[in-house]
Image (cartoon, rainbow, N blue to C red; front, side, top):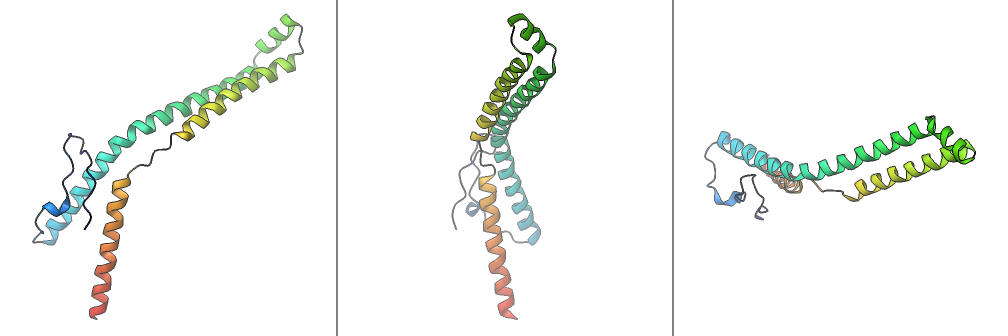
Amino acid sequence: MNPSPDLSSGTGQPVPDSTQFPAPTHWREALLFLVTTRVGIIRAELHEATSGWIKKLTLLILGGLFLLFAWACLIAGGVAAIAVAYGWAWYWVALAAGGAHLLFALIFVLISQSHQVESFHATKVEFKKDHAWLETLIKKRTSRH
């Protein structure tokens, strides 16, 4: 069996390899051990994933605010004031302001997309191991009948 990856359990201690523990003598012990180890892995990876999600959420909020600001610039009366002050047609000023803010919104969205974080890798690996173990268990039981 492959040893589980060395992950921090949030306390700075590595998560122990499941082969270090004796085999449970009762099905309730086995179930409790399985649940506690999976919860520990999920907790460690949730802590790790939180920082990536906060960064992505911040960038998406900034992008959304710039998009909202672009819409407000297209509507606001300030467009007309600038157009009059410089002698430009108001619609060119509105298009330029809206285009600049849409560009900033697009930049923030693209930056947030480039920060993709793979979450819960060890949990997925352990669940795949559990699935493979269950398949072999079911095959053994069906081959006996």
